[in-house]
Image 1: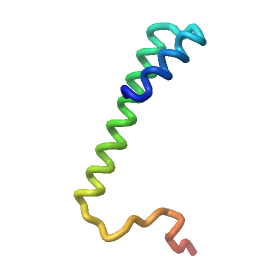
Image 2 (image 1 turned 180 degrees about the vertical axis):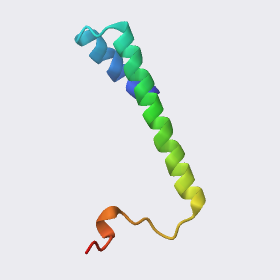
Image 3 (image 1 turned 30 degrees about the horizontal axis):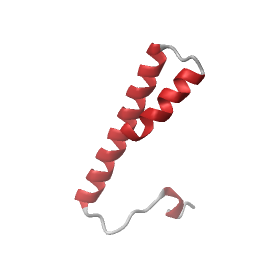
Length: 60
């Protein structure tokens, strides 16, 4: 979040964003980052041999 804070502050001041909307954006970005981090940790701890995406499945 600290990497994005300067950009968010600049954007908020440039576009006259309300305090509520600014905080809402901060909370959403932090939540998304934490969820992505948790998913990454879980995938790593699962020690799966490889990652198979939906595009790799043979759908008949």
